[in-house]
Length: 363
Image (cartoon, rainbow, N blue to C red):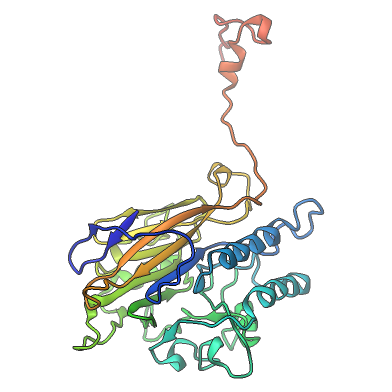
């Protein structure tokens, strides 16, 4: 399915071709969320499940020759991953991300603002050969804490394995204020503005969104050479989407209408196919490993290949884009079925029931 982004509307369009592309303007990104590395670590049967599928994700990235991998939070299952989990994670990232492959992405925004602890995107560090950049936010399982506000993801970023962004220090009184500043990246003539919002306690973020001016959004500069309309505006967010109580979830209506695609982490049910919410689309990839035995986890696990390309005839107009779901083949399957004891009791006697006329005794 192809889309074309417009400031006020979206119309369908066609992106020709499939598979890895040598087109200098074709930006290809693999998107996944909620990997939960380290889950079931003490279970001798399931302890490897998350790592097996995490490796599959990067095998797909290698096969599809993507320009980058975007991860939408909860890379780890716990806030303080064990040494074994950290080492296994770093081994996979080193294997697939550190190589001599050329990186075609150029970051145009202020990297000291986007990546304040490192000051630059990892593949521009002259001391490392990074061939596959990973951009990621934190989730509620691996959120920063302590006096220095550090996360386990900061360790991966310090080792130059990932680009960790979307960590916001709340300012102001009351609920606090934040300003979201995008990572502006470009490949050829294709431009993408990537916004990241790592997990903030839902009730507090709900209150912030409810007060005008508490959440600010920086936009790319509109110039004659780089029109505002030419940017594909994408967001990674990791918050409750399903409302259990009125103030413990974030509604899509809080997000600005000029966004094009929102990738929603935290919810584990796979709804990866982008859904049109009028002004923008929302993709919910879901978790790559089953962490609990609930109905939503029983569905086929998938990730998403996102392709964005500038209009070759009008590069300052809205770009074309396409999202392709990809099945994960290594996840441990399980079946979920609702069982009605009443229906079972009324099965024929020869099928083990009590007959169709059976009625429960009066309470």
